[in-house]
Image 1 (cartoon, helix red, strand yellow):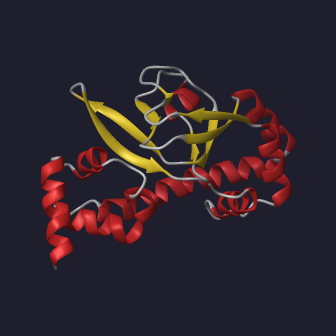
Image 2: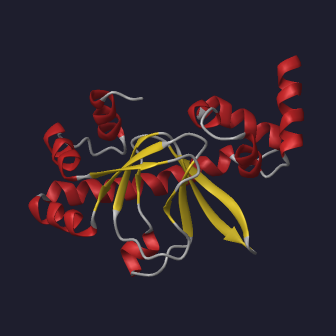
Length: 195
């Protein structure tokens, strides 16, 4: 489990805005705490959810459907800000489901009203939210380079750049994310073990 001071530093480093610690303290003071069991759903498919969430402990996964089959879009480690953009921006049902991975997770929730109040209270908070949104867009481009190549290349990139995620998700979900079968992932791991 991450200490409170480490968690605050993780939040402060998310993006490039570097919010003052007083603002982070204010957010933590307002936020409700939600505990999710392994595999617990934070935001289900098709729900309208306009709240803002921050991952406190554990890793969450973002899923979408392709012909009624779940696909993993990505993962959210501690310090990640999450929301359903379809709901928050357009008041439409979510197209992604957000759920806990193989361990329990703790998530902090700010209601849409609390977010609006913070935006009125502090122009910097609005700036920070914009910075976080731009940071998410920025991370998509490097992600494309990490998920291209062979399954072995993608696995090695994940090990190199996000070992925390590899250790926080099940082999089945990891194989799904890499778009290989669990047995193929096992072969990749064995091959790397003997090299």
